[in-house]
Length: 331
Ligand code: ISE
Image (cartoon, rainbow, N blue to C red; front, side):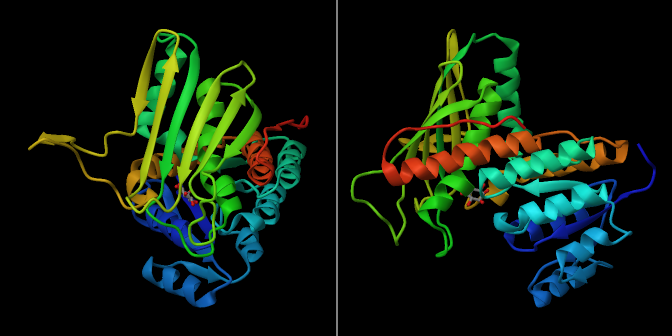
């Protein structure tokens, strides 16, 4: 581990980028936020001014080229990730790329190949659930073999609401992407087929919502994933695994569950920044610590590619209503 702090730049200071910039500025030991970039120069300057002596860039590639930047968090919209992450790889700069790695599978595969050509890992993909204490405990429990082989996984993923520019395809690519990664991680296998079902005739404010995806895993396991982005309730993420010798559930917590006055329940957080605050902190801390040791940990570009490929097939299934096979290309 080097004694010097890791000098980090953040590309894209929308909701998630600003959250990461604040985290890096205030809550991650061993990291210093040195730069932000956003095409909205007013926004970049406002975040920079608020967080100390931080340089504001308009062009993200100028941030990557800055010698004072050791590592980059890529939190721009997914359509820009390929160019920005590949620029980091070519500069030999560590990157933590928010999910999805890219919007389409061909682009994700190009990122996998660019990193392979560099000859070493430089990219961590931001599937933060792997750093959530409850999910991590669930993965360890499954790894221990105590419950035997996982057979079924049931996911619930509900947002209170989403922006008016959110589309039906984004329910798959942006939201379901988390469940796809969680399934690959918990089963330890690739997804071989996806079917996306929708309640007949229901669209809400122009998008097909909720959606239910059924994933078939290479080893025969099955996952069901409800994604409901305008549930109106709050942010709810749960996962239940049925295995050969028992089952396990995470995501019911969120603090103390009260049983009183014929009522059972607790608080429901409003959004993912609150629900997964500890996971995001742990994810970014793990990334910073690894970069300072000269390593990269966590989800790989291959994980990012596989999730994107499954979601691409999911979008095809959303449109056709039929199962769509997933075929991963050799990286
Ligand atoms: C958003 O991009 C996220 O990553 C959140 O975790 C997810 O819950 C939300 O549905 C996505 O839009």
